[in-house]
Image: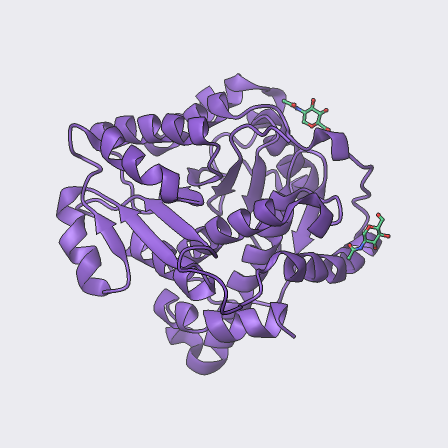
Length: 335
Ligand SMILES: *[C@@H]1O[C@H](CO)[C@@H](O)[C@H](O)[C@H]1NC(C)=O
Ligand SMILES: *[C@@H]1O[C@H](CO)[C@@H](O)[C@H](O)[C@H]1NC(C)=O
């Protein structure tokens, strides 16, 4: 099967000024319009690189009626279980996932750390962070478990990251990236190089054009307008669309929202996207692997939030949630 760039975009929660303008736009125009915010220029680059839906052959009719949603949830648990690689002694280090996080600058060091740790805690063998020079010592000092490359603001950033691409199974682009023009330019180059290697990409940088009157339709339209990129819209329920269907993740979380929660989602999604694509359509029962991966990462994030909230209530932070990943993962996908 030949595949183009596989992208998953995670819109951040909340309204944007594109709310009303969005539904009437289509194709590249949306990329350009959404690109009003500097960070989001990334998305338009990624979209331009994304090829039309690789899994379009698997289109099915999908009902958005609430009655079908509960059943989907049960099925999706099974599908996620199907893509999780078994832990065996025969494997070598790296086989279950080497995930790269592209982000981290002087101002933002927490986000790439959270994303990279979340991938590790969910079962990745290695997590790499490609960040700006000044961010590297800070991120390293948070954890000895991450491999940190201070290359993102160097003149040969793209070449430096390119050297590592053959080892990477997925890239998560955006956590703590900031808005610096040089970094964004380098990230464009990295996205292009990743496309050439067919590496799945999670982009965490999009303003969400929420039309609350019909969330399902709006997330579906967003995905289609982006060229059927898989889109995750976080909210009271998370909605995920690949342009053909919309699935809802209603795993119980909590009323507590803390900064960094989205980084847990993007890091674990990077890993699960790798697992799902590796497992393929047979294991996902014909459902788009990225849809399954996104649903898995959303459930995991919500379950971590739920568990951490049980212990810490109002004082729950993303660090507390990350500490719950192991138990949450077992509860959801290994029982
Ligand atoms: C797999 O697909 C078949 C046919 O669409 C469906 O009947 C079955 O419920 C699916 N199983 C899971 C676990 O999604
Ligand atoms: C996205 O999927 C929809 C529904 O299957 C299809 O009509 C549309 O042509 C696809 N868009 C692209 C850019 O391939």
